[in-house]
Length: 316
Image (tube, rainbow, N blue to C red):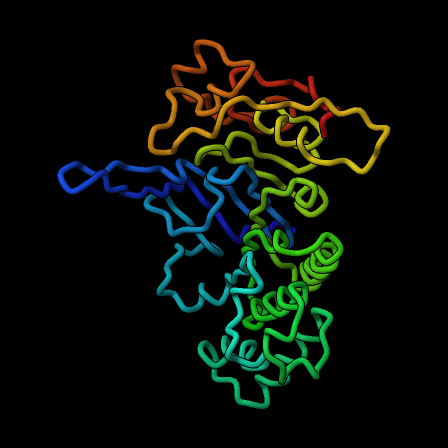
């Protein structure tokens, strides 16, 4: 599969933050210079700590093409191509609507499908996510968190999208339920050749789910490449630290735990040079002077003057 469905170039998201009534607002770069592409049938995971710039917001600058067309919120056809599954299944479903109405609503707004066609499509989607037809007439409060997230996935698929944005879709679920929802997403991707943009901080999930990974730190990508390469041979110290903190279900496997010192810097006042340098044990003078370019090291791209070059392969 080689059809590129998303092309992003130098995306930036800025906010003006008030400093008081008599002071100029300061500018916060939540996302700064992000570029990536995503093909049909593949999953790109965007990972990092809270506050690293993973969240979904309209860009302030840069270009974003969806199926070769500029992303425009007013473009109804593009809106049908991209759907989202939110993090919290308890807050993303209208508690006053029955499940059937929740699933049919996208069809009512975006298509001319009749009542019978909408109902049949909703029942079919319930079946595809492992729920039964009798659930059609029930309300969200009658379901568990895992069932609600399945309903959210079914709703996202009602318009036959090409791209699903999965915004921390498993973080509110128990581990056993996470596995069930993850398997459903994998099966649906194979069936419909869906492209997934998977936003997460859980590297244990990303490792088994993603084809490609982009590691973010303070709004900038610091490492990107095939998941196998990033997990097996991390080049950036921040990536290695994240991987070292990921639990491994093997009591006999040795892991070198990397403990980062200090807190994530404020995006309102980022450090000069590489934004990771205050917490990096490999930082030198050049790291405090200018941000390193994102370029290919051994097997994939990393933004680091002193890459690890496979030194910590065992952490993965």
